[in-house]
Length: 141
Image (tube, rainbow, N blue to C red):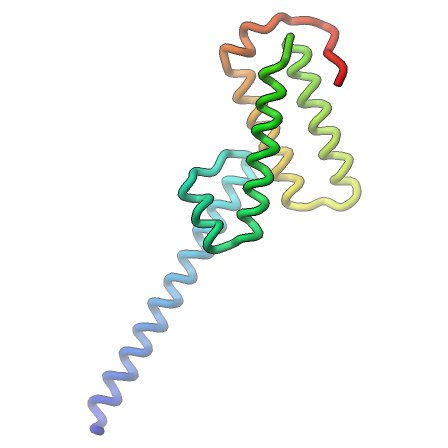
């Protein structure tokens, strides 16, 4: 074996390591971006959910839980008979989350609160909310 071939192999391994490092940096950046979307209370795209499933199963599980909770909250808002009902729902839901925060704050609870707030904001902007009466007495749960 000659020196030139050893240098080529060494260069090849260095290049491979650089590519691996670049991919790891890209993965970390994408995961941080997805985590940021969740922290803002936004919905994840299907491709982001699939990415999480492959690269961070724990965060994927959290995202699935957030998505289901948000959907349940949106469904509850659709049952509102008045704007007061809708406003009561957000107060009730956020007070539940705040009670859990007292026992130890976590990133997931903050994500939950932001998701509920974002869902409520979307509902308030909708024609469904506009068509509700201004009723004063919220419905009991």
